[in-house]
Length: 163
Image 1 (spheres, helix red, strand yellow):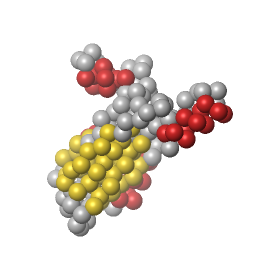
Image 2 (cartoon, rainbow, N blue to C red):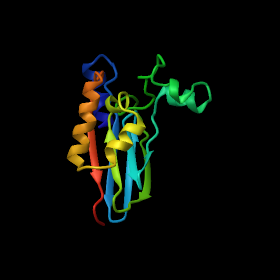
Image 3 (cartoon, one colour):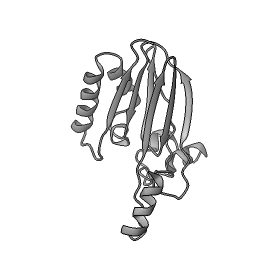
Image 4 (cartoon, helix red, strand yellow):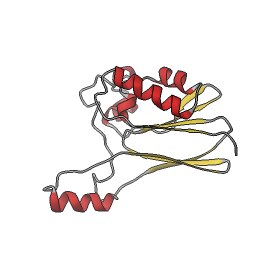
């Protein structure tokens, strides 16, 4: 995909970048592998505790890591939409991949930044705490749309019901 986007960008788009983010979870038996590029995110709710498994590939995340920006100021930063890694952005692509154990009742949220710009972690945790996967997706998208949805929003939920 990366090579194809680079070819199209060079041959048809005057070498302008055509890019995309990626967030993905693969579950097999008692393990999961999750991978991401860019600022689409992967969260896991386990025992009523939400954690962000992915780490944004963005300029503001780098500023936070360097101690130059507080996390609570990241969304309003002028470079809040600037990502540092994307499929199609460079000839070579590094995809972050982690492996973890899966437990019954884990709930995974895979989402675009269109959601995380409008719905905070506490709200996500509350919504993921009850209901079916379809209900959770509906509530997250509805909340994003009610808040103006300044970007496209993509939401996928995986509920682990059995191993």
